[in-house]
Length: 325
Image (tube, rainbow, N blue to C red; front, side):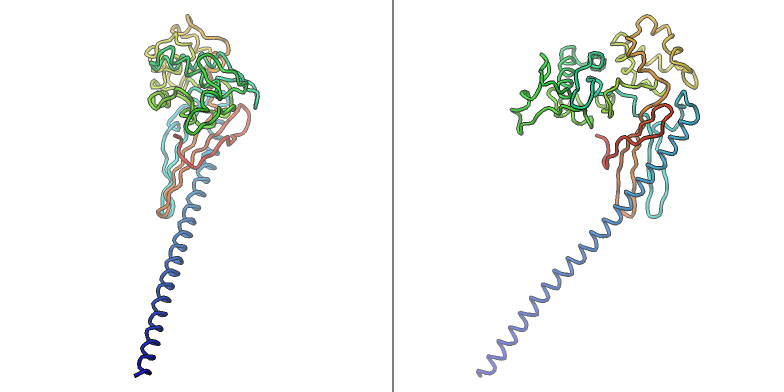
């Protein structure tokens, strides 16, 4: 009887060990399976990103060819904002090149150099003119412009309607002003006064270029929907509807010279300051690329910013692995 009890206990011990080992084996197999899945996902995502970088190289080459067609003007055509599809094994690449300078450069409200940024009055006036053209009240427009300049400048001196560090230390959590150029338009969300409603209204017309230069606008690529940018250049003296009509009356193939554009009777009576005159161009300086890759069930999204100065190469100015907000 005792021997049977010992045999029973030994059997239970063996069964218990088998159960424990089975559980451990299942756990190990799960870890191996998840590890293999993670490795496969990492591989496909990595490959998708390499395809996106390939699209960037193709875009750079295409922009170089575009620049070589006419050194004086960026040719208009269906390249601007047009989606192109490139089939690949197990997926597809979608890419779009667009003029990235058809906007108000938020960083142009200051001038100077790194760690020495100070307010630029003409940039502030243009931003205020843009905000007013978008039906934001004069006082709110001035307050938003001052808040933006104080956010970027490095002097630490608060303007009447602006705000330096002391305007943000009581936030939850507290934070400080940037004291440098904006890298993304979405940084506006952190600046006092730029509510979600204001942000949504101005977002289609603003950008954060990697320079404090006044907005370089190619008038041959402007569309009627961006007519408020002409109103901005004219310091609000050109009604957006009149600006839209001017754009729609653009000659076939675009204006051949900047002087031809400024000689239009609609503009001759209200010419802006000389610095604003120089903002108008027939060449695009900044181009954007949006590339979206679907590959083997994985996705990669990349946005790139190219800069092309007259006579120079196409330079990659920025790259991010997200969509622009």
